[in-house]
Length: 393
Image (cartoon, rainbow, N blue to C red; front, top):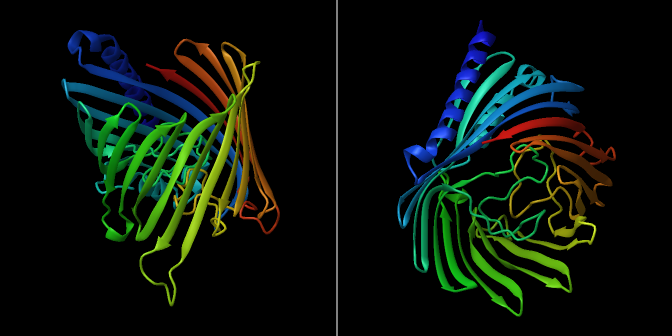
């Protein structure tokens, strides 16, 4: 009976989405509604904390994303974006902390906008709002308050400049990336220059973030310098984006230092990531990145979607990444990502294929392979295989 009610709910929900999509132009010209529905079976093998241990797992995910934008007036815009996810299978049933981990990851903000709608032994239904903001924009100014994504990163893989919304490169199921409860003020001083201030308060003040950035263009390079308060640390750095001949050249550098003494000293850390990207004549697009994290990276790997921190964004002191994508045809695209961690004697390999079945229907198949030595943080990470069928509306 529970499964039957869920199926009825899903059919009614899809019917509402189709109705809204077809009627939105007739209701309000200033209202835009978009999103997608995605079904994804996931298989993984890993060694997890007791009492689970080492074994294989199956999980089944059904996800809906809904994006609403309303141009309230000529200079006011309201944004509301949300996702509702259904999880079923071994992970929900066998991992005692799984539901809590999903809920805690969604509560990363000043206001809790998530809701565990239903939870049973082998399935759960979870809702989360990751964008909810009001923006005022006029000539030379933009002010946005509420849950939003503040993207200060430049590189395509690792972003130490991204103090507010750094994301996990291993998270294959969240292309929109998380948001923050924040205020963002931009002052545009020219066609290619701006001042920007952003503040993300936290319930624990020490975990708050506030920073000022100045960005401009000179000699074909976009440059930015930023500094501020990052989780009880001083954060100072910058980044650049330009090209050498026909090859893109990007980089980010950050210095972090404790504001309070830890013992007799203040700990500090330097994180830098430099990348090049090139589009070849045959449409192969390749990105290569080298990262240096002075403190040596994180020491524990739990779940692929676990977000990193800007002052410690890697699992190893050095990290080298190559990521390529190639369109085999107008409707078939392939990609391959590889990361080498010399400190951990480990590699990450992730091939992926996307097929555009119909205009608004995409099929994606990917795998993630973590191969590491017995002393590596990836020793128990295991492997993942997933398939995704997504309908965009």
